[in-house]
Length: 571
Image 1 (cartoon, rainbow, N blue to C red):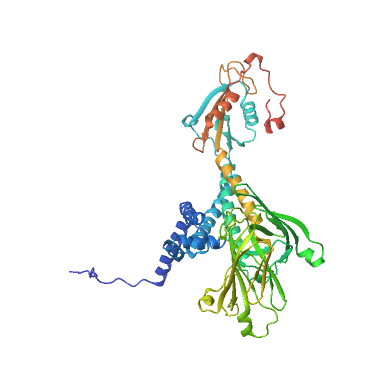
Image 2 (cartoon, one colour):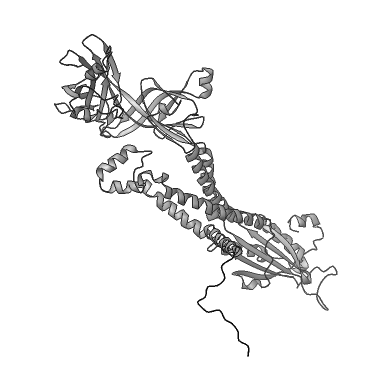
C-alpha cells in the first residue's frame, strides 16, 4: 500500500525567489503607471489642483501681498497661525501643492503621448467600410436613381466635397462610398490637453528661472537700476535664480499723477518714466520715455515693470545748533488706503560727530502721522487722498536709534525697545504744515518743507511668458474645436440594376427607362446630440430627392471624361 506524503496546511511554503520578487515589483509598477496615466486619474488630479488653488483666491499670499497677510493675522489671531502651519499664505510654494502639480504633469504626459500617436494613426487610416445592413443605423434612406453607378458615385463625391471619402467595390458590381467628417474634434481635444500640459510646463519654467522684485522709488527723477538683489526692497527669485546675472536696465521715475473722484475714490494712476535697456546702457544712448499705469506695465527685453502703489514722503530739513543742515524725504506708509493717512519715521545723524557714543546721544527721529488733506484741529486726520492741505503730526525723538545694534528695524518706525530703555527720548511734539518750523530745547530747528510722492514698482521676469500666452491661446482654440465640431459618418451603397432576359438595358450595361440603380444611404453621428439629423436629411434630398429625367429623356453620358469623374465632378 502506497502512502502519499502531504505538506501540513500550516507549514511554510518555499521562500519566494528573486525572480518572483522581480515579477511582483514589475507588475506593481505597471499597474501603478496604468492607474496614474489613466484619464480618470488626470481628471481627479486636475480637480484637486483647482481645489487646492482655491484658497489662494480668497486668502492673501505673502508674495504679492505681504501687508494683507499681516492684516489677516491681526483680524484673525486664532485662525491665521493654524493656516500658516499648513502653508496657506504661501500656497503655491507648499510641498503638497507641488506634489499634486507634479503628479498631474506626469499623468498628462502618460495620457497624451499614446493618445496623440493613436490620433495620428486614425487620421491616416482609411474610413470605416460601409456596414452590411444600413437600415439598422439611426439615419437611413433608400431609393433608385436612373443613372448608372459611376454617375451616382460621382454626384455623391461632389456633394461630399470637404469630407474624407473612400470609394470601395463590393461583389456583384456594387460600389460604395465611406465618408467621414469632424476629425478636427478629436484633434481639438488633443490640442486642448497638449496646451494644458504646455501651460503647466511654462508656469514651472517661470517659477524656476523667473523672479519678481519690488522697490519704492521717489517720483522726482530718482533712478532704479536692475543691478542686483540689493537694489530691491523685496526680491523673490526663482529656484534657479541667485540674483547675480540679472538683465541690466534702469528706470527713472520723473513724475507721478493721480486722479481722484469727489468722494475720494481713485480714478487713475500714472507714472512718467524714462528707461534704458541693456543696449542703451552699453552704448550710452538717451533713455526712452514711457508711462506706467495700472494694468499697463512697461515691457521691454522680456521684463515687465508694473505700478503697484504710491504714497507720500514728507520732506524735512534739520538745522543743527552749529548751522549744519540735513534734508531728507523718505516714504511713509499709508495706514488708510481711502484717505492715505500715513505713518512713518524720518531719521537723521548729526553731522560732525566723531565718536559712536556721541552719535548715539544725538540721533534724531521724526515720527508721527501725515495727512495729505488735513481736517485741521489738534488731532490730525485725513479727509481726502490728494495733497490739497498737507499736515504732519510730528513726534521728535532724540538719542540712540539702534541703527547699529545688529537688529533689523522697519523704516516706518523706531525701535520701541530703545524708548523703553530710556535711550531714545521724545523731546517735542507739534503739528506742522509746509513751511512751519519746530525748535528743540538745544536750538535744533526742524522745518517741514514739502511733500513728495513715491511709487511702488514691481519688476517681473518670466522667460516663459510668451510660451504661456501661446499655450493659453491654443488651449482656447482646442476646446472650441472640441465643443463645436461634430463627428459624423455617411455611407452610400449603389447597386446596379439586375439584368437578365427581358430586362431593359443597353449593351454596355447602362440603364434605360423603367430601371435604375439602387441607392442606400446611412448616417451615424459619433457624438451625442450632434444635430446630425438635419444634415442627413439635406444629403438625402440632394442625392435621392432630385427630379430625375425619364428614361426616354436621359441621354447617355459618354461625354463625361474619366478624369472629371475621378475629381468628383458630376456627369
